[in-house]
Image (cartoon, rainbow, N blue to C red):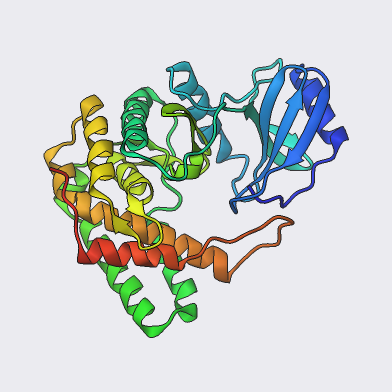
Length: 317
């Protein structure tokens, strides 16, 4: 992620001392992303990722960290937050709330095949089922309420045609959210940001998923839609790739079959997923924060995806 807060070797060594993980061997800032400060940290006990939270508060963070711990204990391949001798997994580094979690092996697959998409679908369904007995609750902080609050903020920066699209889509999503079909959708903790760069592979073996800091309780279908909008599209055009989408959904359904309401609302949730990331990228692009390695994402990408989802709805067979 972008480095907003510089961490000194002394601060890293102090954390390792509290966690009893041995001597610091290396500390390197990670570029990419726009939410938190992240470092690769190598010490005598192994390789970890140090995250300093720039937007999330100490009150919000236990939901994410304990969810990761819960999923790791359920056998889902996710980073495992490291605890001190009191069992605490939320720490303070450089004056910011922080966590140190295990580093996953493998690398991101940025040009996925149908086999990669199937692996993502299967682990997503396993993750949803594993989260059913997670006791903490927190809403999706980038859900409909946030869209309603943020669209008026970014609207002055849009061209007329973009303004028409974003306002009409927001009205449509408010209408969908008020329906009885939407109320019937299964819910639980979701990742909400499971893009290609948040999953690790070794060949075609999925070795882990990470970056849970947009997670919240929402519909499982929305989580599936977010995945389909990234893993199963042609990135330059935003167009749907049927083979990859069919593989992802089939693998998901082999673990957790979709309900009738989910099948009916999949096209609407694909549009919702595109709107969510268009709005957030517009916000980050036009209202940026300073960071030493910050590279904002192109907001027009998800504008293209949304137009594709509106013009060419896709139903899972």
